[in-house]
Length: 300
Image 1 (tube, one colour):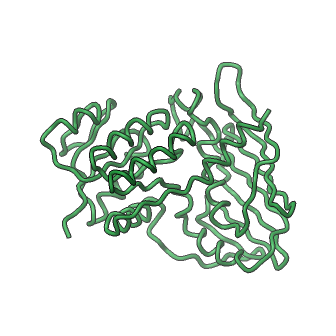
Image 2 (cartoon, rainbow, N blue to C red):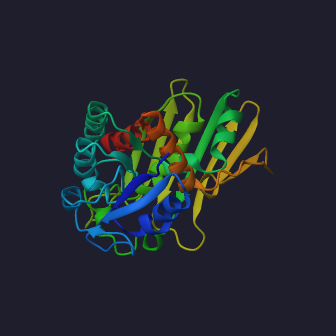
């Protein structure tokens, strides 16, 4: 099988740190080109925008979209309409309606749309899901605190409308919860801390609940200094579980639990993308996005 010729759209920090190394390490893919205003990748053609790449004679099969979310919809729709498979970084779009439309466009074009949640591919997540599947939830708490200056240096888009603010990392925790918990849960209250010169929150306290009334609380903060904290603590009727380091480490009843080595979150994303392309299938999980949208909807 020939490698999937792939273009990276948006060569920023996440593309440089994660996507390009993962793509190049997977023999199912070939990095063919980039489309980015901020620079490209040595050894492959670079174009400032996707439109110019599409108009060129460079042949490619897929795009990985790594731009800020405010322009995801326009880029993804253009790629899908031109018959390109799409791997879409999180958060997926500015609005939930845009994501629904991308699903329709991808289906009509007959190509793969893989809307990704990289944290669902953390090493401890699948083991946690299996352990929780036979237990009754009693309560859960998320502590997701990091330093925005470390992870988004000089990036003003994250504070603008559609940039998600603290929910850019917070949605990672929500994506894990939606993957591992066997029952649905919904936003009940949210308190959003928005700086006076910003459109998006720098911190948020969110309370979710299941239909049975089990509370899931979450504390998101972009002002953390020193060690970064990405923890999910869960209590059930038959013991406790803790995912830490963004889901890469798992403890059950206070003792470290073995987790499979899947090669890392982004290598596993690209493994899954190759599977979907080979199967002519798409994968879109809108639930984490809907929950964040609901936090904005009911939040104060």
